[in-house]
Image (cartoon, rainbow, N blue to C red; front, top):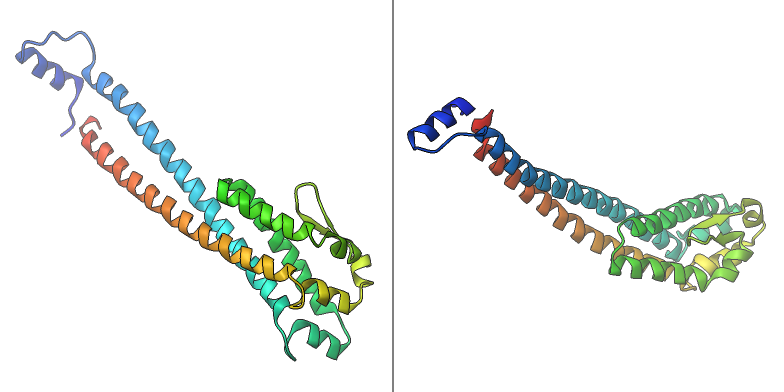
Length: 216
């Protein structure tokens, strides 16, 4: 049943309450702030959930791409390049690795928290500690920590130097792989937390709205 001002006012008069305003407007005004608060919290939690889901994906891809560089034996990317005499697969994979690295850094910044700031700093430190070797391979570190490559210089770098920098004998890819996994785990947990909060507030919103559904 839709409760209008007329019905509310009739009820008020029967109870001996003087009517000098629209009661439904008053109730609507009181509820609007609460509903707006719920909506804003929902929007904030949904945005945070989406940011963490993106971070989880990019960090997982970063860890996987670093692990490919760490593979050893005849099937490793460096052994295959040596056998074929071509570094094209190394260059192709390096492009993907750098894209994942840069995306992870940017996503960590967009989901700033003490722990995410720590992870971002650790990734940047890993690159900084190898800055000379990266520079020699045509890879430079920007002010924001992201990496860019001079492909002409990269293609002039010998395979042994690239393997020493990115392969299992070095520490760079090992640290990046480890950090990528930790970032992904943390992002996954946070995405789940914000998802639960979003769903809970959605239930609160529905319950609140249904409570006043007689307004129409």
